[in-house]
Length: 205
Image (cartoon, rainbow, N blue to C red):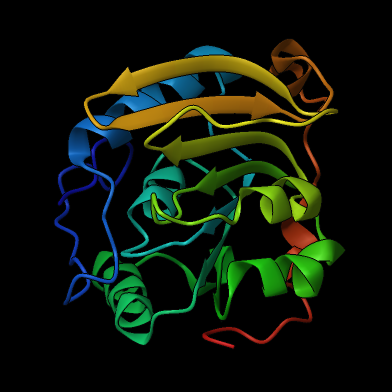
């Protein structure tokens, strides 16, 4: 794996050992960020606050950082995956002030610490066999969600499906939280949540 675009383009990424995680392929990751670029406009990820749920290697969140996201929160429960996230952030040399890494179940995190912040973009890539989506739609506080799945997702109101596209066995669904994608691009979905990490302990929780 490697970083596809931005200031860290071409840097190699470490994948977690074992079969507990399924890293997003370079092709799908590139397609996701091309899609986000077309939705968010000229500024793209610049200045956005992002949460990478089921972070795995952290490749999606690191891609967002490389493309200018101001703050990325990584949430993952697998210790080997968390080691990979931390190793990748360290190897690339990303400023710790721009990241927060949390160890734990995603649904539990959303019901707790995750309730304190609204993000501009949420990147969600749970195991395809997971039945977590109802909890995610209930707990997510984000203006725009990129969801990876194998089958079409049932998306409840007030969420709105903006775009769906399949890449082989992966279906990418872009969803907005009751605001138009244009409003998100214009800044109506911006949270200004850089302060999210202030007062929070750095590193794995």
